[in-house]
Image (cartoon, helix red, strand yellow):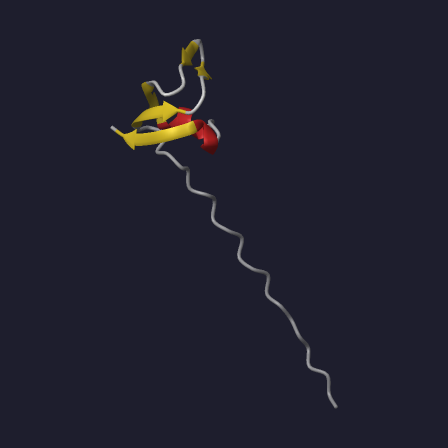
Length: 69
């Protein structure tokens, strides 16, 4: 019985993950806990308008709601 060569092709590398938020867009957000953004501290539950690039650095569970403005 002849052996057949079994070759596997490597899976394609996943495309770079798309960012959760557009870095140049503004978002109206509410945070679950107080968040420090530079010299500014935003209270938990208080609405704030921030850039998407700032939101990318926040963990998912820290953001209660985010709406693009």
